[in-house]
Image (cartoon, rainbow, N blue to C red; front, side, top):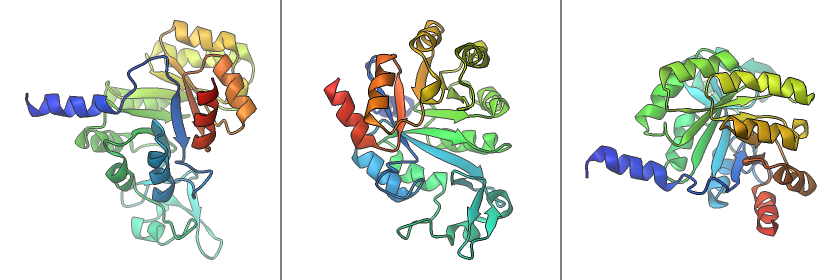
Length: 254
């Protein structure tokens, strides 16, 4: 067996085998029990055996892919600083809680590889090439999902690496079932892997419609037990949540 075959086996080993299983996606890691988007939070998500870590990506001034929800960080003086205007050493100097720093995607890969899959939420433009190159170098193309509200960035990723799974994030402002279907058509027309709508936006009919087009529905961000039970009744494929333990509890009751 050659190295390519061994690598493929390694990728498949941490993927779901049963299409009917619900994906548990750790929003910013296990962010209900650790500072969000930190290595501590990501490690706890691994320990809790989530299926995916969702992480928010930006690029620093010196071209490092870093993990932070917002386009800016707040330094120790309370000043807002935009990540794209900061070098990594400046970003790393900021304490984001419990002594944790803002990590790089490389650091996350260091603890996640062969332990958990990645759902990378691209929050900014113009670093898709660097992202695709890193995932390719780390042999993580087949086990990763790239998600974004920025449709053109997803198209750019698709152009660079057609084997990456793409998920179109859909704004919580889109609540009309008719508009939700219309917006999702962009993902359908471009053969995306999934749509990621706000959980309060969906209906059972919408989930059925997406499934008819051979795509998954992974909903964000579901943190209440009653809401988890409701979206499961609608037939969603994945739950993005801050509270991995609660998702597991609800699934065990189902």
